[in-house]
Image (cartoon, rainbow, N blue to C red):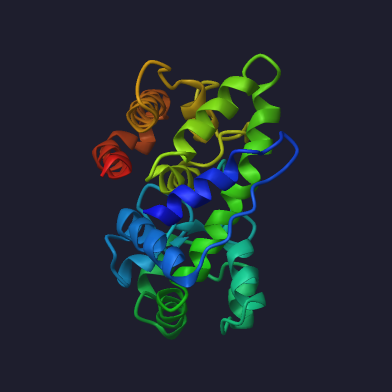
Amino acid sequence: MKWILFLATALLPLFPSQAADVKLSDKQAMEIGKRIWTNECAGTISGLTSWNKSEAFPSLGIAHFIWYPDGKRGPFEESWPGLAKYLDSNGATVDAWMLGACPWKTRASFVADLQGPRLTQLRSLLSKTIALQTRFAAMRLESSLPKMLQAAGPSKSALVRSNFERVAAQPLGFYALMDYVNFKGEGVNPTERYNGAGWGLLQVLENMNPSEPALPAFTHAANAVLTRRVRNAPPARNEAQWLPGWRNRLQTYLK
């Protein structure tokens, strides 16, 4: 885990307006990517293209990047178009339709097409680009701290920065931060709220117990904000069904 400690140390001298500069070798990116792939898709090829029954969009790749159907939007940040462009610009074979609007308007049409040529081709691309997907996910963490510090404001920015650095300095800290920000977002988008309360990385860092070691504190705070999310979620979404899996995921930050 020496490489994680090295990367964590590189994150320490950040300023509020400056993003981290994270460099990953293919081996390092694969190690983190496989962990995220296991978290999101149980490490399966089939899990790389999914559309949950309770959601209005497909989730693609190791970090379940969101792709909204054409003409539709939701409260969560859309991330597939950015990934598709990133893969294309880094030498992956990305067909033009993958760079356009989502071709499936409903979950039924998506499920009916699971073994069709488009989704088969998409899974092939995603299974061959684990390291690139990880680097794309790392880019989100690179730019997340300045956004969170700005959103936290003068009263909480020092606390958020301190907790970010505390977690980043741990052997599994970089993985935990990177996985969570791609799992539940940065917490700065005002549309990602239930009853005014967010569940992103910002909210986790704001709620860490200063008397606990960094990773247990991070994990306990994450559990608290996700439990609050479920409690505040619209009943029709039945988000309680996801909470046990989310909690299992948080435990990987300690192992």
